[in-house]
Length: 304
Image (cartoon, rainbow, N blue to C red; front, side):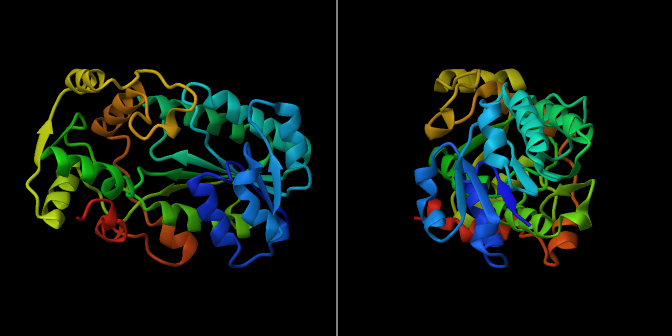
């Protein structure tokens, strides 16, 4: 069985690849990327590295030829993702792929205010109507964001503002998302037409998360609960672009568009992310990491 990984040069793609290489031969992997040079090491060890873009349907179909199961990692192009994902699903079907595993988002419903959530919902509909066997992995908010981005910012400023209200989220370690995806890819028949909520083991408010950051760091952090309009004004004052622009993720100071972030906070406040499952453990056989464990892994980002 040949496994295709789209976005294989991204962080999640690399983590899934590393997990799979513990149990399968490199030649069974077809790694798709817009920049093949970035996967030179994997290619040298026997993986099939192919250039592919979700904006080029014909080339994408050719790149997927010979694959049996596809890990469709959602793209970063907010506003274009639903169309890109549809192109990928159609290309996979035309190339003879039999099963697609899709990285969606937690709590997807048609009523979600989240821009990315709406795109994930649209993709899920296309996938379920494609005639292909599928598995949908609805990944929760990454717990890694807490020590890598949230904590350093909050510690530096001594404060953190959010418009999530008392909304709950069960942050999940990206490593757990990767090993869960790898387990599904290794035995896709077991997970045929399943939809999983991939979450951490506990629900938190943002106030809880900030309090944890303060306790672990030993630094006082004031949590500020603000309105969506106030949070938008903060983003505007910081110079954050409201709409996504291609390549934004390469700019660590302005990686996400504020419209996306605000609507994501709206979704949390309205309860769309208040989901906590044991699906990571059910699929992989071992428990999901806690936020505290993830913070310890990444403390070098802010523990000085």
